Every structure is written in structure tokens, then in C-alpha cells.
Amino acid sequence: MDRREFLKTAAIAGIVFSIPASLDILTDTCEAAAKSDLIIATGSNPATITRAAIDALGGMKKFISKGDIVVIKPNIGWDRLPEQAANTNPEVVATLVRMCLESGAKKVKVFDRPVNDPRRCYVQSGIHQAATAAGAEMNYVDERRFRETKINGLVLKTWPLYEDILSADKVINVPIAKHHSLSKLTMSMKNWMGVMGGSRSHIHQRIDEYLVDLSIAIRPTLTVLDAVRILVRNGPQGGNPADVKKLDTVVAGTDQVAINSYGATLFGMKGSDLGYIKMADQRGLGTMDLSKIRIRKITANPMKRLRLVSQGLFLMLFIFLFLQTESKGLDELGYPVRLFPDFYPLILITTLFAAHTAAVAFYLSLVMIPKGILRLGLPSRDIA
Image (tube, rainbow, N blue to C red; front, side, top):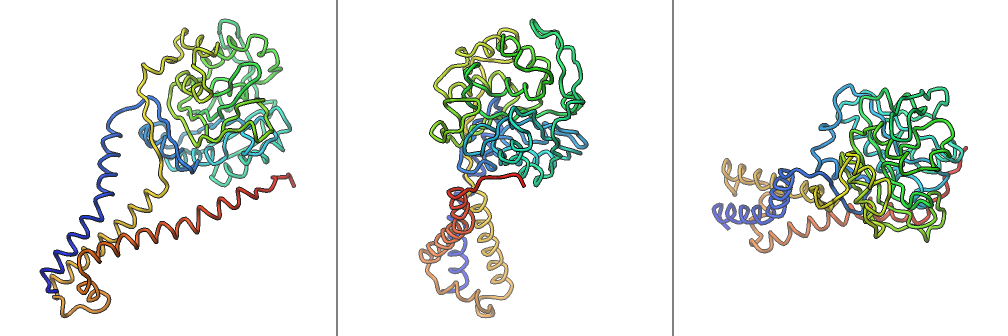
């Protein structure tokens, strides 16, 4: 094979191998250009789908500015493991913490006022370990930091709310979607009960009206609904794995009413089936009718980034070979460059795809398979 034929072979192989990456980039660019109100991200990795959902909304820098004090409010109400779907998924919380810090946040606080023992809830949920490892400040709620706050709602006039959420520059609400014995479902609007002081049992007497008043008083910058696992029965505490359904989904947006309305569909319901969502829609807090908002569904593939990297490396190799042959000529090139001219085009292309497949398999063996094994034998997170 002479130099001209070799360059032709390399060019053909490079173009063929780069087609999938080019199509991915073109598709992502076109979809990003269309603004969406609600992002529904699905995939096997909670961190990946969380990041993909926020990126599809425009990226975390759209919501968080340099120097911001950010509060991330998950549900950590129960002494339950992540697999029991009573609390927000810890990987979702940790990913949001990282994204806020990457966007320049000065500090990220994560907290909740649990129903069960806070020490056990923080640890058993996995959120304390995950959030602090990601860089968050995570403390137990201090009862002295509740401040009587004017709500001026229809039924809720004043109530003690937690100082940290009132003074934060930005607030991200991160509830889990689950069944609730009283309100039918608990998602973003009911998650605000975790920043309320006093006797919250009083709220349950007129829960729909109280939740709407509370949601008008606390306006999140961003809402991320965790539906990696949902609790379909015996909520809000759960405990039986048979009551858990794995959806591998995250829903993100700025309209907490729309997110609640979409969340209801995950349980075979409509937003109008929930009294507090209907009231919130009627009072202008958000949009319940999903036909009136722009919803974009995406599938986040953790292999995609690896594929793009490997394709990029091979394209760099071809550029290197091209420059070398142009400057020196084939006869002057040493091993392994002289190895390539001995391959016919079809064999060369097949070899490249085989190498790519091997790279993906290697990634699976190192990351995904051990991770699955660890999940199967997950030990209880006991407090020292």
C-alpha cells in the first residue's frame, strides 16, 4: 500500500468512526436549542440522569451564581435505607451539591427536620455521607433557629420557618416521589414541611390548604423530583421492599406545581386528583395542565461520554498519522505507524470498532458490575 492509498484508508476509517459522535452532537445541539419547562431524564445511573436533567434546562450556572449561599432541601424524614424509597436518593443530592459548587456557590447547605431520630435518618438515608463527601455543609436542624414568619395565606397566617432557608440566596427543592396516607402523594410541595417548626400535626387538619399557603411563601429556584425509586404504598415511611418501584427517573424544572402534576402520573394519577395541586393551580402558583407546558424526555447514557472520548482519541491518532506521512513519508515511519498500511480498509475499520467495544466492556467490568454486586449485598448503615 502506497502513501496515497494509506491516507485514503485512514480518512475513510476516521470518518466512519466519527459518524455516531457527530450525530450525537448534532442531536444534542438541536434539542438544547428548544427551551423546555420540564425535563424528564431516565437512565441507570442516578448521578448521570440528575446532571443530564439540569444540563438540559440550561445548566446549573443558569440558576446558581458565584458566591451564592445555596440550600438543598431533600427529604430525610425517615430511618430508612435508600432501597426503601422513603428519603431522597443520596446520589441525586450529592450530584446537585457538586453542580452548585462547580457553578461557583460559596456554600451549599443540606438539611431536613426528620420525623424519626435525626442521627439515624441522616446516616441510614445515605445522604449525610454522600452530601458531605460532595462538599456540602450538613448539620442537624437547630430548634432555636426557627423564626416566626408572616405567610399571609388563606389559612396559614404565620408559622415558624427555618432561618437558613429564609436567608439563602438560592433554594433547590429535592423531594422523593412517594405515596402518603393523608395527602395521597408527597412530592415537592409537601417537602416544605421539613423546614417548619412547631407542631406540624396541626397542618394535617387542612393539609391541602396549608401546603399551598406554605408553597407560596417558599419559592424554590429549582425543583428536582427524585423518582429513581418511588414508594407506591404504605407511605410516607414505608419499609417493605415490595412497596418500592424502580423507575430510574429524575424530573427537573422551575414550576413546582407542574412537577407535582407530572409526578402524579408516575402513580397512575393526574394532578387534578390531588387537592393541593388543584388549589395551587387555581391560585396561580404554577401550571397543573401538562398539555400547556413544554416537556422534554431524555435518556442519559453513561456510555456516551466514554464513546466520545474513545472516538476522539482515534481521530487524534489519524491526524497524527496524516501529519507524519505528509512530513516523512511512509518508508521513514517507525513502528507502530508502519503497521497500519498493512491493513486493508475494511480490516482497519473493524479493528477500530473492536477496540471501542473492548473499551466499553473494560469500563463495565471495572465500574458497573462491581457497583451492582455491592448493591446486592448492601449492608445496613449503622451509627457508630
